[in-house]
Each structure stands twice: as structure tokens, then as C-alpha cells.
Image (tube, rainbow, N blue to C red):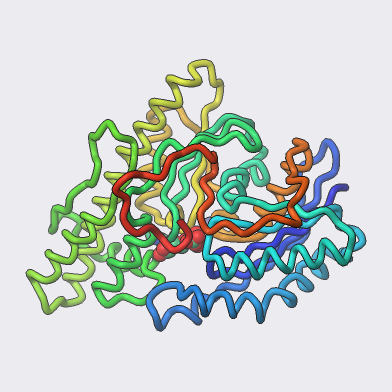
Amino acid sequence: MIRVLGIETSCDETAASVVGLRPGAAPEILSNVVLSQIEEHAAFGGVVPEIAARAHVEALDGIIEAALSNAETGLGDIDAIAATAGPGLVGGLIVGLMMAKAIASAAGKPLIAINHLEGHALTARLTDGLPFPYLLLLVSGGHTQIVRVAGVGDYQRWATTIDDALGEAFDKTAKMLGLPYPGGPNVEKAASRGDAARFVFPRPMKGEVRPDFSFSGLKTAVRQAATAIAPLGEQDVADICASFQTAVSDALGDRVGRALTRFHEEYPGAAAPALVVAGGVAANREIRATLERLCSERGFAFVAPPHALCTDNAAMIAWAGIERLRAGLSEPDAMDFVPRSRWPLDGISAPRVGSGRRGAKA
Ligand code: KG4
Ligand code: ZN
């Protein structure tokens, strides 16, 4: 059995995991330990990079020990160490990658530098054994992207956000309305009691030929609506949340619909096309229902890995390490690898002109 130790520290989760693969068998997650720092950042309404980096330093060795012990494995039985080397908050990346280099050097094991987005992109192969090619929709606090995944290391970004990430838009909306951090789940909860027809918010980019996303205009519209009727009662907040969520789902459905059409055009013979979702926002039931409906209309399978593997974790990093080892693609000089706060998955996608501030991890 190949066993890889994965380490993830790119944002506000400190995570370590051991994933194993026996020839001819399905991969096994032998351990998956995730420590969320949500409480440390809650008072600030978002992730504070300095606090995150310090929390990783304090927790990481214990988390790695727990991952090895839960997997009933010692470092001697590990074939390689895979660590997230970007994109993300650079302080956290330095902590994780330095730790991985130290372990690799002390234990005499190879080190594989992993792109965090590749971890998300390949998770559906760990959980569902999904064959290439497929489409990935990554919607988290730091990223909003559609990626065509055609093989290990063969990715093409088809769409990205030109301003805020979708999770960030949920978090900012929540903050504006006085709902606690993280905003997404609280906006969804409030929306369940609200009237989605009370406010008509814009559907940014809907119908446009350009494939990208935009959410900052929607955020401004929410602020204007809230200011116009302030002070807000509980029902007002619920109605704004419901109207916001419906606008977001509608805009997302339009953008993803375009990508499904393009996929059909580029892979007319694909027998079982699939859309994979990843990232915390994929937990939202209305968004999920919209995407499921769209996929069933267009003949796509809708693949949503279990929630714990959709959000940040180290099993996806260990798995990306195994995929790279199998494909003969591991970085030969990873010990010299410098963490990259920005690291586009396909290496060729130009930065979007006119983009504003992006999410913490973009
Ligand atoms: O993937 P994730 O856990 O961490 C990042 O890599 O960013 O995603 C966190 C983001 C946050 O912005 C959070 O508000 C959002 O996902 N989120 C949701 C929901 N649950 C989490 N957004 C909308 N609806 C939800 N139910
Ligand atoms: Zn992520």
C-alpha cells in the first residue's frame, strides 16, 4: 500500500491526514484530522492572517501526531509527505511547508508540493473514483472558479470571479445584517424564514458572453436595500437573506449553465459528463438544488463529495500527492519550493484585468 501524509495550512484550518492506496483497490482515508480556527477569527468577522499563522504554529505538530496515530502509522511507513504550498495566506503556507520539509528531511521521505486547488479538483476521484474529464465548480470563502479537469496536472480555468468570492459575499452580507461569522450558514438559516420575492436584487453577469462571476454589485444592492428600510427587524433580515440567496443561485446557475454547454461542445462524445462541487458554499441547499436541477436537465451527473471533504482538509492534499506519484508528476526539487500566495491551477490563465480585491485565499 502507498501511504501519503498530507498537510494543509493555507487558510484557517490546520489539517493533517494519511491516505492509502492498494493497487486495484479504492483509496482509503486512514485518518483525517481538521482543527478549525473559526472561533479565533469570529470576533473580527473574517480570517486574520497573522492570527491564523500563529494558530497553525501552535497546533500543527499535535495535529500531525494525531493523524499518524489515528492511521496507526509511523513516519517509517509513510511513502511521501504532501503539503499545500499555495495559493493561500502566506504565513500559514510557510508554517505547513516548512514543517513538511523538516519531516521529509528528518525521515528521509520525498516531499510533494501541492496546489490547494488541485486538492479540491481531485477530491471526487478519492471519494467517487470519477474518471476524467469533468467540470469542477469551486465555491468557497477564497475562490469562485469553474475548472475543466482533464487529467492529473491538466486543468483549465474556464471562469473566475472578477471581484469577491461567493463565500465572501455571503460573509459580507451577513456582517452588514448583523449576523454572526461565518456568514454563509447564518444567511441560509435566516433565508429559510424569509420572502425571496420581497427584494429584486441584480443577477450579476447573467446572460453575458464572458464566462466569469461577479458579486460585489450584489453586495452593494443589499446594502442599499438594507439602508433604505433601516432599522431592520428580524423579518426584514430574513427577507433580504432570502432575496440575496435567490439572486446568487440564479446568477450561479446561469454561469454554470454556460460552462456545461461549453463542456458538451469540447467533449461531444463524453459518455457520462459530471459536474463536481467543492468549497463551503456548496453546502447551501438552495444553491445545491439549483445546480442539481441544471445538471439533470443537461444530462450531467452531479457529484458532491461529503461535506467534510468539500471544505478544507488534508485528505485531499494527501490524495493529490498519491495522484501525482502515480502519474510520475511529483516535484523533483520540492525541498526548494517557495510557498506561493497566488498560484493559478493551470499556470497559464492570465490574471483578470480590472479585478478588485479577491478572497483571503485567492
Ligand atoms: O471551503 P470553506 O470551508 O473554506 C474556504 O476555503 O474558504 O468555505 C467557507 C465559506 C465561508 O465564506 C462560508 O460563509 C461559506 O463557505 N459557507 C456557506 C455555507 N456554509 C459555508 N455559504 C452559503 N451557505 C452555506 N450553507
Ligand atoms: Zn479550499
